Length: 123
Image (cartoon, rainbow, N blue to C red):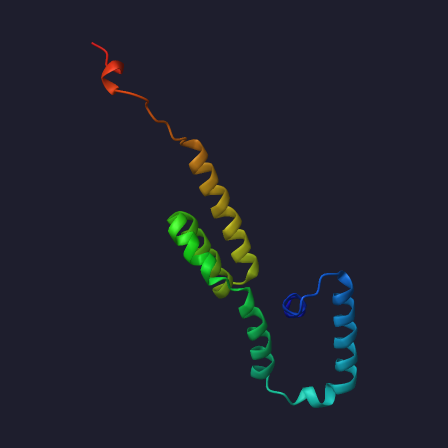
């Protein structure tokens, strides 16, 4: 996943970029395993974290908050469950909440009266 983010940030537009990145990773792994072995896990985690931070879209969170609070709540629950429980739980919760919100909204369509309500009263 971090390789994909780096390719995207670099402007890669074809699948060949992924193939070249895989070859590069294989070459580095085979050549520098001895040196990389002594790197702390925190260093490797920081490298992946920095590349993943480009996936977080704060303006989209703000826009969703302004547009629909229920959609924002679904997004927030999905993000929190992904961080706390894992990707699978986050995806399942996001899809489930999105479907539930869609069904709720479509089961209660908006209806508006045109004109005066006095005409519709029955005696």
